[in-house]
Amino acid sequence: NNELQAAAALIHTWSTAARWTDTMLTHRAKVAIDVTTATAMITFVEGKGVKMRGGPYSVNASVDVWFNVLRRNIKQRNAAQTNDPYLFSDTTRLRLANVVRATIREVTQDKTVTLSSLRRSALQEMAKTTSLKTLLTISGHTNEKTLLRYLHWGTKAGRRCAAQIRATANLWA
Image (tube, rainbow, N blue to C red):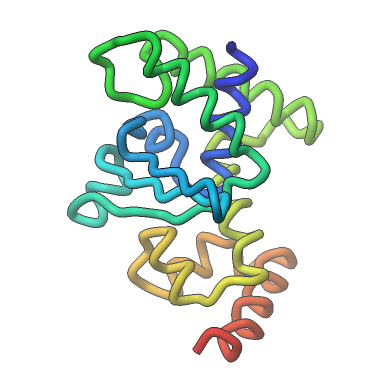
């Protein structure tokens, strides 16, 4: 069950480029799964992203890879018949953060990696195929320069990311 929830949390954070705390505050009733397209519309109603945007926001995420994990997690949480509205239970939220953080550091062999690194990495990966306008919407940034700085535009990886954003901008204009 811990592994299931850790997998669901990690993939949820990655596929939506959400902040870790926003992922932990996702309401299970606000996750609408479309079985035919293997996508989920996830509406965030709590967390920093909601506060920065001035209200709830939705992200459409491809869930083909983690469809069964997400569905089982929701089913288990609904079966628990709790008044807790969250996709991840109160008792597991802190434990999940520690499990996921340790797993990421083990896999990357980098002790400096944080849960925040997930969001930035997800946005950098999305930048390869997503328009700047969409990235601004998903990330919640309102300024293009701020987003590019967040993506480490001044670093080699960031310059590569920025070039990819510019290259795809013509495709999505």
